[in-house]
Image 1 (spheres, rainbow, N blue to C red):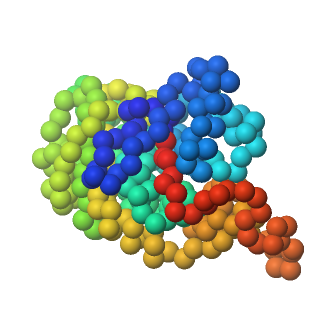
Image 2: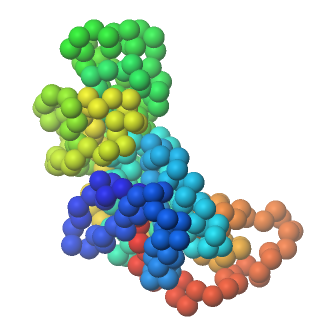
Length: 294
């Protein structure tokens, strides 16, 4: 993770701790380089999970480090349509799965799959600076009315509704989930008294509002929420049931067409595979090692 506030507490006793790359863009390059290199040497592969609201300097520093290390054992995962709290939830799910018998390529690419099972949004006091979810002009105008509050769903289907209107409901998951809530500078019990029952949440927990949330939502007057699958057994079944393919370049088993570590795509039919279709260089234990998620 790129911030300590994105490293949520463990969901169960098997959840691995997060590796936090704190202030990596403010450290001397040599110090930041050593921190990432140490993680790679200790764990074999590293997945860095961060949100779209992460400062550009952080992402630039991370890519500089990967380039300097000339490593294809560092993967970046930035789900663009997930708010910061949902990114933190997703990272914790990957930390749960890191204790299972999944190869690093499968674990790293599982993030794309698990995003489909997250429902993320926020209750906002203003839409004036919201630019990551489509908002029509009428809703923008209404947001200037004192006391107005809006329920916004960012993922999986963008939706904006004004509280107190007949259509003030957000489409929720059709499967059992838990609900995580992070309260900012907005006073309301709508999430607990209205949204949680409507979404049939099996439990509601609270977490601090991530620092990046104010930038993502355009206001600090927000209550962010995310519905997610909490059980490791369900997460593992989802990931293990998906077809896995070996990367023709580095040999790691992955989910999907593109390798999340070396970015290789499947070769065109008849094209020679440069390294025989399997791992071509040293990783003493490419499989079965616990993969840090940070």
